[in-house]
Amino acid sequence: MPTMSHRRRPRLKPATSTPKTEHESRTLASAFESLRLPDIPFQAQHYILNALQCRLEQCGFEFLQRCSFSEIHPLQWRYPEEMELPKFFEVLRKSLDSKEIMSWKRKITEIRHAAVHRVAQNRQSIYRKLDAAVAFAKALEDSKCAEDIRLFKLSLDGLLADLGERSKQLMPSSEAEKKILVVTRSRQKNGRAERASL
Picture 1: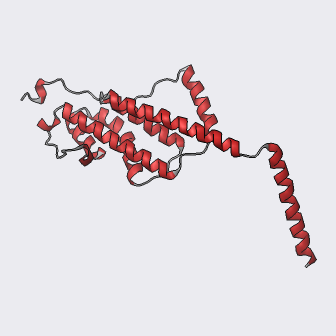
Picture 2: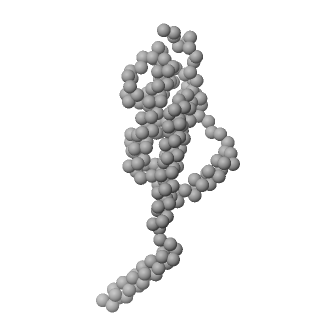
Picture 3: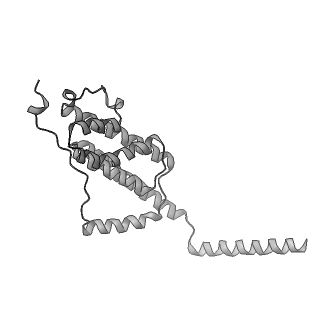
């Protein structure tokens, strides 16, 4: 069996931020507009983060298998479910350029932390985690994982947009809001008058 030195040394692409294009600026504008829509329910957040954590653990496990890290570092994991993301980064740190590893470690272990400790997230935080997961999967050269997560994010976006539309339909019109305000003030005034007469 060839040793690691005879194989192509795996490269982990560093986490980078790219300049925003005009399309991305328009997308950001629509994202700010969507801030008015309801956030993701807490229970759903927990399911999303758990599923994302499991998918990234599988992606990392397969990366370690493809690159034969077991030759340098005996891996104690037989299945993806046995591996934890922080330990995955420890193996990588011992085997690859640490600057590249550290650029990803914080972003990806935040996903695990939020899933395990049930840390409440807003929609933008969930989206940032999904984007980081897509980029990380691409860095590990796992295009299937990256595409799975990207498609999940699109589905989630569609569901939330639909939920937002339904919420808007349930919201009272401005005319109805005025009538409710008049009735509320009238009740408050009548309540004060009743208390004063006692």
